[in-house]
Image 1: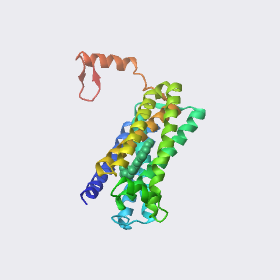
Image 2: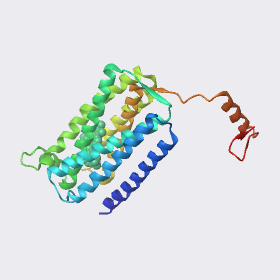
Image 3: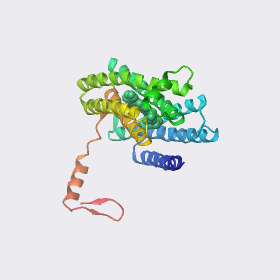
Image 4: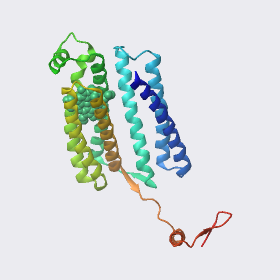
Length: 276
Ligand code: HEM
């Protein structure tokens, strides 16, 4: 179908863009900078992502295939996407600083780790729900609920009920956690507010999705909001766990050269040195 083609083409473009990011990070950042490591990690995970996608096609886990293997690979695929997004977000976050100090965040740090694991569980269960909705579409909400609760229904249909339940429990936990982080860590305050607003928005979107029987446009919006929420939680956790070291201050000579450049008094010498 046309959207499968779009997915494959955009995945190819994404892979090239991530590899370009790796080259830029390795060339532009000093040896030992943490963003080099996260960029390299993103490159490796992007390759795994492409292999997982290729595996789905090669093993016939597409179209009407309703096997447990397909559900497992779909959940692993979404988990891998979340890890890739986390590494890309961390690369951007870390590149703004010249380094970071890891700080002991105590109970808050442990709660953030649990939140990240919980969000992966929500995402993976959501991916299985989406598969169930695609393979076994219902004509009405009443019929969908009857099938979900029927002991004779297909496993993918019976599993649909898990996602909203864990999403609501984890959503409440995330809102409380974001409140605590916002109060305790000044630099994580913006990310924490963003997370609280997005959790509420995402739960509303989930219910709209349910009532409209998950049309494709709503699925895309719900997935986009899930990815954005995940990035917000990653940045909130990074800001709590790590103390950024500001970019090195310019030396007095560099400051003089910059000021002269602004005044138009600097000319570039043929061999590359700066003449003021
Ligand atoms: C923090 C809250 C939530 C997160 C992070 C979340 C995340 C996700 C993700 C990642 C998917 C898979 C999308 C895909 O692969 O296409 C999904 C699917 C789904 N979710 Fe949620 N969800 C949340 C809350 C809810 C709630 C509260 C409901 C319902 C009451 C819900 C209903 C659905 C449905 C029906 C699907 C399958 C259709 C689709 O793909 O959109 N979600 N969710």
